[in-house]
Length: 428
Ligand code: HAM
Image 1: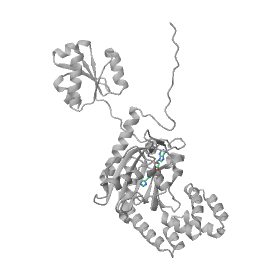
Image 2 (image 1 turned 60 degrees about the vertical axis):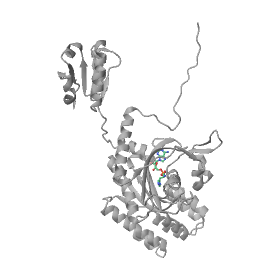
Image 3 (image 1 turned 135 degrees about the vertical axis):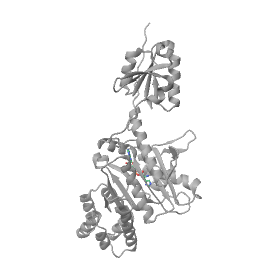
Image 4 (image 1 turned 60 degrees about the horizontal axis):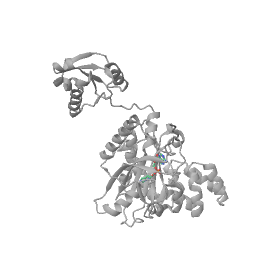
């Protein structure tokens, strides 16, 4: 007989990843650390669907965003999209079901996001965000607490070196207006400013008929972190006065109340998303190289667009995957939990008793695994050592006659015979 078949090899889709048990232990560690920090600031967790109606994302950003996301018609002809982020979904949720909740409303989330990005280290097509939305207040103390929480989320997770930059889009708008730039020209400049391509910004400004002297002054302000200097340059503008005053309160609170002293004022922060309208901030991990932005956020407007009653909103999202890469790059020592006990039956006659003892240990919250391959003591001990088990428990007929088992300490190699009723106290 002759068989002919084609072997199909399935590859993981571009820009996505599989996670091993060890990866997942690190991810669960980070998730736990972050949710503890969110909870400590009085935030409550929410969850929204992985896919939404496409128009939720085009409503603010326009059809152009379709090129950057995963969208598709379902079998009923509805246009859907895998969420590229969670701010619009959480605002949709708020307007639909939570408007009557007491304010301020503090919501946090973990969620996979999907973007049709060009994959590279730290940039994926499926990635996870840990983020939050604060609804109902935009006082300087609310904004200071928000920024401080972003900082603490990363610091509490174990990151040593992060840089915080704070900007303001209302001030940037006034700067643009001062130069008499059209909306179209502002749109052209925004990505250049975002990427700090200041020479290109200068050339473009001159092309837009801005006097070289004014272009130079504009660029100086854009790159200055001196609030007094910005204030002096835009001194006649009421919006700027209020924003700079708030900024002073925010930075004062960051330093004195939250012990966040390392930050930079940076009017060149523009943020990639269209819904921001005032304070904006970003946190980077310099150790990451090209994709170093860990966190981005600020004040924004979406509620009214989604049919809700006006209320101030702000929030941020942290790139969960990048945070893990940053922790690994900085050499953070993740504690990988060790299996407490690995049980080995000497022969088939004691198998049932071995499984019974394993169950008794699990009930006492002792992490326990059992040899399921009947591979004998020598090979089983080797396996127990390879999975880094703390103790091996050998169950044999002779010891069982005395209601006992043998416990081997896998670190020291010491062995002792222990009564079954005493195993728990011996292991704990
Ligand atoms: P975003 O800056 O687009 O903001 O994303 C937040 C973070 O997600 C980024 O700083 C980055 O760490 C991570 N991230 C973005 N794209 C990728 C990717 N392709 N692969 C891996 N990580 C990525 C937002 O999404 C806003 N919704 C944040 C927000 C919440 N603003 C107000 N509330």
